[in-house]
Length: 323
Image 1 (cartoon, rainbow, N blue to C red):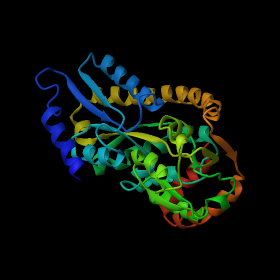
Image 2 (cartoon, helix red, strand yellow):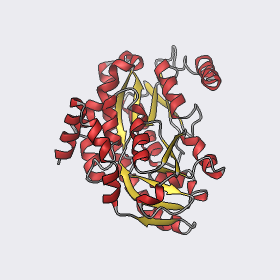
Image 3 (tube, rainbow, N blue to C red):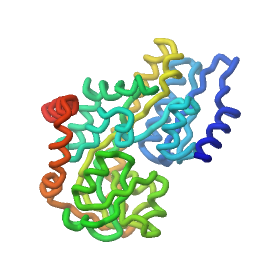
Image 4 (tube, helix red, strand yellow):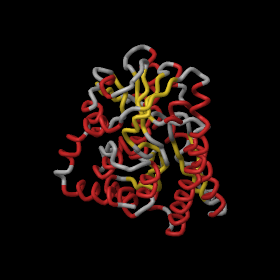
């Protein structure tokens, strides 16, 4: 809490007034990823397009690497209006709108391409708008690949997860899924993972291949298992008060630039992923494939429970039937 207050004070004293009396609106965009990550590169393109199409009237200042805090902290700061735009994952967003939880459900999507088609459809757009009454609006998604387990010891089957302490996002869906798979979920911020694994606080974590590589988690958890339990996207969201201060034309430009950056990010994401496996093998990482059907069977009780909610049932059925 002290850290949040400190960041808030710094922002209010130093940055909130940026652009005053200059005719320029400066928007702060924060995230916890590295500057080499495809999502960061896509947001750079997003900021560039907005700047060009508004003739410099809107400037987006990007703060990467968790400079303004982890995902939970920047989400709180965005709600308070100290940060204008953030990148987070769909998982933690379910605490604000349960519609987001459908995107983290294990083995719901046929594959990553099915996932991306859904995100670009009316289904995905309705989820982005589900938080309007909570003080922020979704601008676009970003491809976050498939989420997989990585550990300090090999996981070759679902039985190998029994009793393992696994870092998960702050998401009820991810916590329940991990429990059903036999693991012990430990919600921690992304920035704490490396040290937590290194010190034995957790046995491993779950994430996509690029985040695993960019964060150098392979140094402390060299066993990576392609169980592909979830395809939970990243999402870029904006403070609703700041959004409402924009003109209709500015809103249109920002929304279109955000969607264009999603397309750009997909391209560089797949290019980066293709190169990684061989690169990581050279660093000592061992990769495993598993019988995913045994994982699917373990998480079925999660669906039995969530399908009792009419709205969630409708979303799940729409996604399963979406081509």
